[in-house]
Length: 126
Image (tube, rainbow, N blue to C red):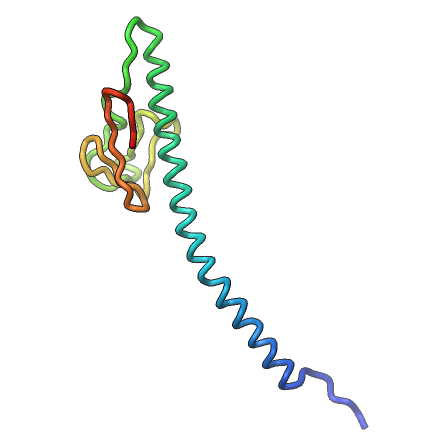
């Protein structure tokens, strides 16, 4: 009598249950990672803009007067894209080209719908 090789029905059911539990735990974490990545990317750009404002100010202090940039870019109001890059004045790589929008001359909205306003008199971007 030969013995058949393979999995029993109980073993297959247990594997399916384990895979179901793993996917139930992993899928919500995956979606949370996307949100976390957007938040982190936005914070990185905000930090870069603030550093760029400080660098611009430091470079202007070589003369007798120091000044913050009057504008952060030459972008028009609307979505930031390759032809309408935001923050081009203060970011050395040429500005942000996606996920941001320019609401007014000094107001920007990030990918998480957080609004930031630039004040040229004090150099703040909050």
